[in-house]
Length: 297
Image 1: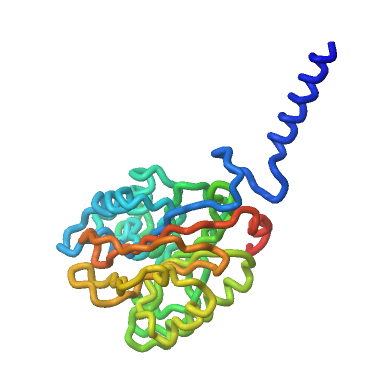
Image 2: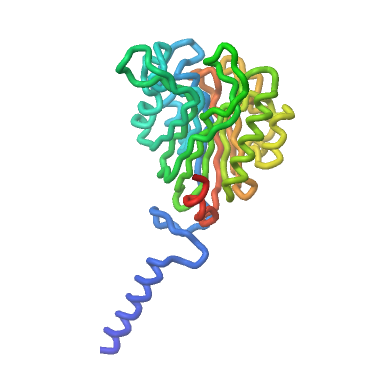
């Protein structure tokens, strides 16, 4: 009788503490209770699926992503039924299906179709994720439209935020594509806009994208002040990402909050686009951003 009662007490304790978990740690669906979560991320300007050979081939883009092992990918220059250059395909939906990932699309341009009844023509940035996207927002930042003959700087969509549950770590990931013009005026405004958005979203975060400026550009200095540049862990490699045919500039970046550990980074050599993708291995912190789902509507 005593042995049976003891066994029941021990079993009760195991069940209760197994379900609750250890204090100060967040459990994940993989059963782990580690305070750190490792994830591989990528930023990739896919040039609407058109390679350095001028050929549209979205399958090549998917293969690059798959071979890299990246689990969260920020994409730029994404066509969704945009036109003939990308076969009127929904590039993001095709990639998400091929890679078995969740996705969020943040169109910069949302245009009427050429033919009535066809899907809307869209172009923008996106995020692919192996892990659940629990909330997503298409933010406005300043843009100088390429679809207007006489553009003026004005707020426009196309700055993607996806809050992702990475094995128990809730972290906002951002995909951005800054202005390409030689004059940095619009980029200065865009960086300021992004910083204001970050101020409204507390906690750790990861910013990925094509900044269209090299590291010494003054307009990027606020980002270097605010975040850790993932490439800072790499020695004796300039990290050039453009052009893919003859890399001579680093304009694609992965920035992470200082509390996030950057373990490694690399540029992948591929001609599937006119940019080279940059990849980083990060260690996120569980339990730091639990409040963010309710905020930033």
